[in-house]
Length: 121
Image (cartoon, rainbow, N blue to C red):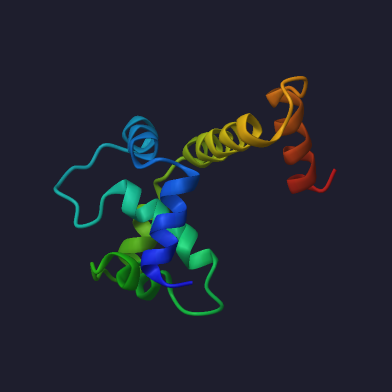
């Protein structure tokens, strides 16, 4: 998938404003100005996971046009809380449920099922 296509799909999955709000709420406060916003870091991580091989720095650099070292990405990634990714998944799942599942299915049940599938229970 090309960079522009990926960003378009990501925007459809989670609107940019919603992703920005989640990142502002959960991301650690920067001590200095950052080259890469938290939203860009998150989209870079997702894009990296979809690639067959290569480094996070290469993939995110190609996606956003901002070059950083692998160690800088590792430090930034290390400080992102798990709750940020849980909320992103919940937001995406909620949008999917609204569009595809009848109102009788509860979000709590689907999230429980997804957790069990992910953890191998």
